[in-house]
Each structure stands twice: as C-alpha cells, then as structure tokens.
Amino acid sequence: MFYRPSEGHGLPHNPFNAIVTPRPIGWISTRGADGHDNIAPYSFFNAVAYVPPQVMFASTSAKDDRDGTKDSVAQLRETGVFCVNVVEYAMRDAMNLTSGTYDRDIDEFDHAGLEKAECATISCARLAQAPASLECKVTQILKLEGEANYAVFGEVTGVHMREDCMVEGMFDVTKFQPLSRLGYRDYTVVREVFSLQRPGE
Image 1: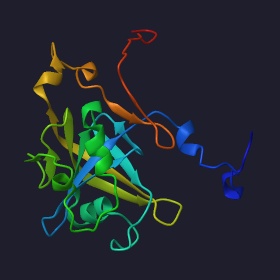
Image 2: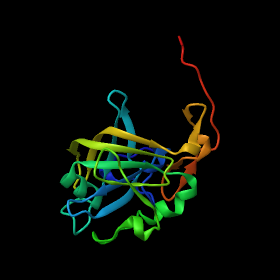
Image 3: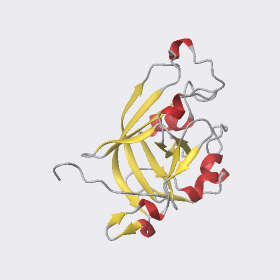
C-alpha cells in the first residue's frame, strides 16, 4: 500500500503513529503564571542533545480555552519552564487519566491522585514518585506546519533519579519498566534489555 498524506489514507485509523514506534512518553508537568499546576503525557518526545542536555516534545492539538494550543504549552509560554517525568508501567492508568481534555482549572496531579514535589532549579511541580524527572528551561518554541502543532525545546537544568532505579552507579531501566507509545490505543513496556558494542569501541 502507498498513500499520500495530503490525499488521505482511506483506512479506519491513521497508520502514521503505528509506523513511528515505539515512542518514549514525556509526562510533562508545567505551572502557569497563576500558580496552577498541570501534568499531561506527550508521545512526540525525545532527548535531542548531550551537552548541554536538551529534550523536546511536540503538542499537536488545541483546547477551546487555550488560544490555539493546550494547557502545557500555554503555561510554559508564561513561565519559560517545564519538567519531564518518566512514565513507568506501574503508573500507566494514572498517566492515561491525565491524557484527558479537562478545564484549564483542573489540576491533573490531584485528579489522578499523584503526589507532587517541587523542582530544585525551576519553579514547577514534578511527579514525586517518577523513576526520573528532568527539570527544563525552555530554549525554543517552534510553530510547525499545521493548525495547532508546536515543538518545544528545553535545556535540562536538574535531574532527579529514584534511588531504587540506581544499580552500581547506573540508571537501570529494568527496575521500573518504561512505558512507550505505539499506534492507535496501543502501548508497550520495556522488559528485555540487551547491549551492543559500537564498532571501534
């Protein structure tokens, strides 16, 4: 099968998300200028640079009460900071609950029964029980093609790692089983890890 996205695919559901998989999930927490906290998952997320460490996520839809975007982007526009919280399999239901479209005054931390902690380098809440959290200062917000598509880039200014995820000085993903996004309504979890040595190392 071949299709041109501009002409449609003719399938019951868009296959694009199912092709680009698995995708890590950034559980993005933000705080508005009014002090209101928000947390929401984004599967268009990744690390993009080592020095200085930088990450990005993309928001691709809008809410009627947020002027062409969603709560996360609206709030980080106001404050210039956000926090990426790593999603583990054990928190899949809470993560899914925070993916809903809620009124801007709803605190998704409270709605999903999540414990907050204050970040150390930015004024923002983070998920207290997350395997890891990356405190970020916004460096760029890029408007992408499409009505409500924005890519947010941030420099990591602080890193939290849960103690039970540390093994012999290394952050061990097998200790918490990272959750990843597939296509449609599907997810996967990391349960098997193997190593490869690069040529010349």
